[in-house]
Length: 393
Image (tube, rainbow, N blue to C red; front, side, top):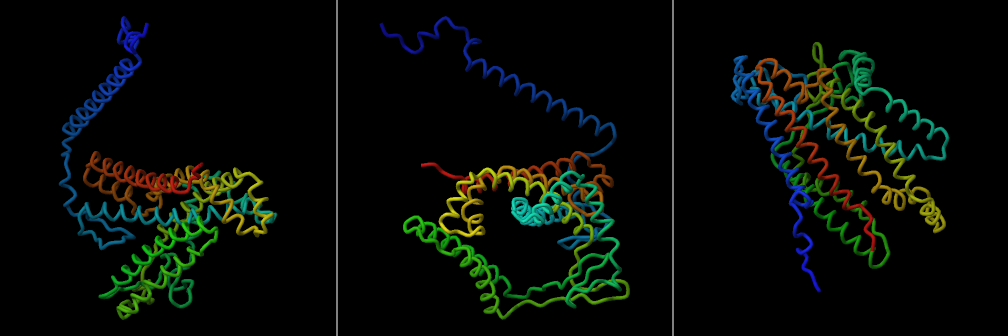
């Protein structure tokens, strides 16, 4: 006699059914979360009303009344709070992006050095990692700012850099490029170079899969990225001039200055994060069986190509997940900028909060910006991880 699938469920209560039991607990969890959110919103509104604090976003249009030491866009004390928060956001984005690039380059170099057969290089890399990884980032930030950059000579006695720039306790002063009409053609050339590099890379991979012969697509891409923008710039008539810094009465006039606050934060974040990235790189390389390098050596490859073509491509699947975490940590650690006066998002938001009392709105801005940056970084690294992972046949 045959039984249907539902015959065995007859006489069984809904509570004993795993599906209904799971739905019940999920519904209870959602209900509890909703009650907590509602209670939080009611208490917040009541507390704001008791303290006569008006909620809303109207404060963004009021004049800020304070200046900043560093800004990527035009800003003065006459600007509104909305522009002040935008200045902080752009400053956070700048130091985070540059820190990620510098930390990655330095971290990979130190990670490879730790596995070097050169005793001096390996010991130096080990000292770098152990010292920086086991001291607080805030302490390193104070060291870079107060002990390295601020004691530099004043502007009159600045350290000259090839007669075009200067390094002093005011920061690093360099010529400022001024782009004229037609400069957009360089961006067009860069876009065409990127598209051409992608096409050549895909063609080179297909060619290697079919014939086994490698094509120097990386060098060709580098040549395109350099040559095409320069060519389009030349066609446009070189529409760029430079504003060189000139020594004034007390400081430099003209040019662009990277203030010590920015330089200290960038160096501290980059060096500190590089120590953790170096360990992730070392772990990824050591995860590859020695037989891989021995086989490549038996084929006649030199140590450099073995590391670049055999070991690192396989090690990336181990390196990328912890690398993503370090990128997220670097972005969030940039909020320590408030300790040395660098006007990042937290510092600008804190000043705005102190002057307006709009605590809920400012905290919401902080949470939204850092959450968005973290999610975007994670999404990109997850995509990159899928691109480089090994796919078994």
